[in-house]
Image (cartoon, rainbow, N blue to C red):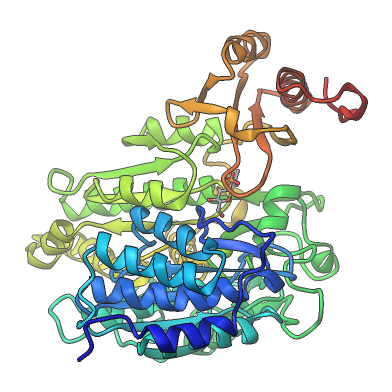
Length: 551
Ligand SMILES: CC(=O)N[C@H]1[C@@H](OP(=O)(O)O)O[C@H](CO)[C@@H](O)[C@@H]1O
Ligand SMILES: [Mg+2]
């Protein structure tokens, strides 16, 4: 077994994947993400990095997902998945950034050697990876570059083909727990769909049949997975698939999908003649890890049920089942949100259970949720899941119920641990979770929506010369820099009933985001555009190009 880097093989391969000189890459919240045509060298290098990460962790399998989620079709991206199916450990994000920016093959080799030293990587360990991609046209050639990286370093690589991000996360955990008492499931797509399908069937056994659910697949990879899922579910949950044009150029995420629905707060135009008033519908995003529900009321008006509404529905149901099971003392349920959660959802949840607010980005939510016995986390944009701690899963396994009602609730909780993809937000698994609760509560979209009434809100982007001059505290709810700006925002907010507003630099786009909400629509809009105007002026924006809607 070799205990040094196969430098010659890496050199030859690296020369085939040169880094463009004028691009600077960054491994951010969602991994590397930019135009697909700029990512060839990044994919090659990520192949080598993933192998090193695996070696560092004694040959545990690392996942690599090639996707740009809800972004436009010409974009692409790549992210690594750690052995438990979670996001890459934060300290390695910096290693990824460094490697991707080495300007030449020699600089790349040097950066690799430094990494091997500093991260204390034992090169004699095996390297195992599993990888997949979404349906983007740039995917196949990027996967070739990734495979060149695997070959150059001699990794044992398993191709999971074209699949969703959450299925790849599932694979990683399933492979790494195979044959252990904590086995996460069969490490195949069949295993994933069977696990979800069986759990749903147990959860809704004996409940009345439900009307068909319409799924907007964003013309992405979710269309393939949803089709297989529908076949596994049969009559248990009738499904109608829409926006399944995965090979149509330009269709991906275009005027459809979870991000479109959430941002524009509108029905995808493609569904306007399809969706009937009262029918349940949901949108997936381009890699099927986000979920947004919606329906049309009798008058044809559109109503959106976002990540906050999903968190409210699901958390209340789990709390209820825990109580019926007689486990109230042992199993505490908590919720994690970000500042973007609608104020009305936070109020609704806080009246029922502990709620924590953390900075934007799934990894922050996931880690905070791990601290509860059962941690429910959702971003308002529809990305989220539920985590059951190891102790809680053991409690559920060992508990002896004393009544039939307790026994049934206990079975439900155990089935939920199977139904929910606990590695990461999973639109299809979350959808089955929502359907389970709606079935148990005999809710339509209308009843679910009425748990609380969303405060009108508005999200505005402000282009500034340097977004890094904006620094926040208190889970991004207050600005500490530029100095003095926060007290001016406070001054504005105080003038609006039910007003709330905060400003933070985006982690994925070169903009500053302004969020505002208030008791009535016009006031929420006015507050948002006033704060946006304030931010623009304070950041030295050119008066000549000041957006006209800013107040
Ligand atoms: C307001 C908003 O939706 N922000 C999104 C967006 O982050 P920004 O840092 O706001 O650009 O992309 C992240 C990654 O997909 C997601 O986690 C987050 O919720
Ligand atoms: Mg996504």
